[in-house]
Image: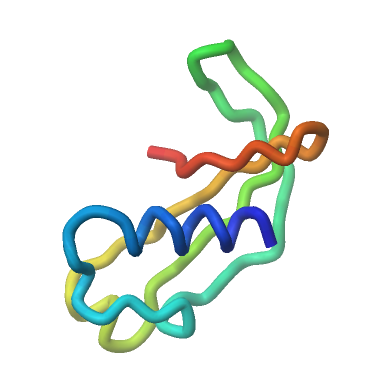
Length: 78
């Protein structure tokens, strides 16, 4: 739920995204992965957002959000 909230917030911020709808994305189950960030490497939960249908045709690619299970801090991965 935290990953979806962060993804939605990021996609709706800034420039218009052409009618962004969360239903245009397939959401993976969370999985644990090593993520390297400014604070070094951490084991975080990662959720992938994969475009489907028209969203994919518009050139969107897979986006991922990492969530720290201890603090609940979420951030989009690059």
